[in-house]
Image 1 (cartoon, one colour):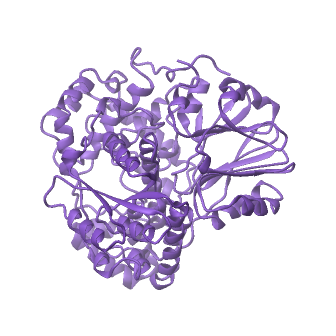
Image 2: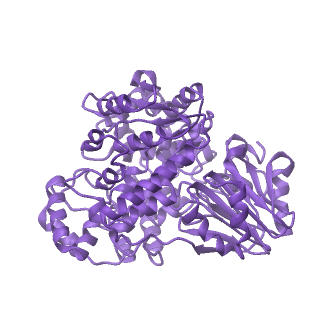
Image 3: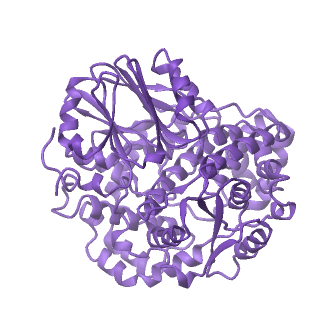
Length: 622
């Protein structure tokens, strides 16, 4: 395999080089003549890779070069005017607050350069050192292939954690020597290629009332959907029946593009998504509605053995690989150029249970009502809830203490979960060595890691947003490989800022479902559709998908690479997959390990346990 093996399989990727002669060696490895390229004002290569022309808006003169790569509502003329006012790379902070959309922003001025992604994590940036020169990239595995990077054993073990890898461990790249740029930071590179991370975004204080915040969210979400529809033609969108996707569809129906909606039906007769989706479809002006029965789709975990391919980090996205790619083929046949999803709405519109820790201190009367409501809904015990509310440990102390007990927590625990984030936990088939490795990593990360926000409520929301966006960035690539990228308006910076500015206890209410979205979409979405209080779930479909893949599971688990690496007990894991699944344990724990196994096989192979070998396709270090 050549150096371009991974990059050659992607629809879109790009390297960002500093404005120095020392970076020319990296450009030479890739072969600039075979790639799309932008140049620094000096004439040196700046951005190299592959991207769709309609995804790039750029400007360059003798002093400054600016580029927005992704989905942005800005014309070349406006970009020229904004670029003319840039005195240095720090002045580019204003772009994300003024330009709607989801994009990577790159600026080069007087030998200094800067690149940033999105605050959600949907657009990420990684960087690595090449002979003293920092090189940025949109995908970590492209950097890994260029640098012969090996997998970081500690981070690999941490990816066994489910339902989520906790911050800040989740920020660690799974590749040794490759670092990720935090979502609230930008990567700056000076004239000799030295990197510097600078914080460029601070989450808003949640001070707005629902009445003040709803119009702002409405405007931001309207602008976000308009970014996707403004080009006309045909666009498609999920119409699951949930309030998030329904809102996106009604906003899209107002734009200049023809709308095609898509509803995936569930095998679970108790799932009422279908009823709500059909009600919404009947009230939309568009006439093209696709309804897919489970038998029309490959099912969850189809093509399981290849689920890790194309993912630059281990994520759960591979479980819907077959479904998303087949559906994208249908959208392409309808003429769609982009497919919109309501994913991200759950993350930004609802606070996590930790919000009560914040609310009880700022608004005691309202906080008490919310505590009582959550106690009734979740059946938590009073004593554990009071203890959790009284806990005033700092984030670092809380994270370090959490490392002492990584045992799996019952799915329906009666202990209140009001910590800084969801409890860190490893599955029962993780080996003692893996548990020890992860515990040490967490304690080390806890020493200097600042919280994402000063209070638990906002911190936990930001962690949830990052986790969801990192999964969904891979879903976008799955459908982009079929010609129709998936887009997520709820993850746009301006939408997130509008939602986060609303008080936590008004954004979330145990007696109301998504009150902020209801307030924002009044007059756009019919009132009857905003009154839904249920949420469909697909655990039945997930279980049926795994049952249908028993042959593939057998092949995958005959000799797991993770067991050879000493991270899991193969017998315990096989027993969980083929026998009685541990009671009260989330199915996500099993899926996470399965997909981690698939990812390791796709990116590392099994050329000799327990050593972790370089990424496939490597030849020599630049």
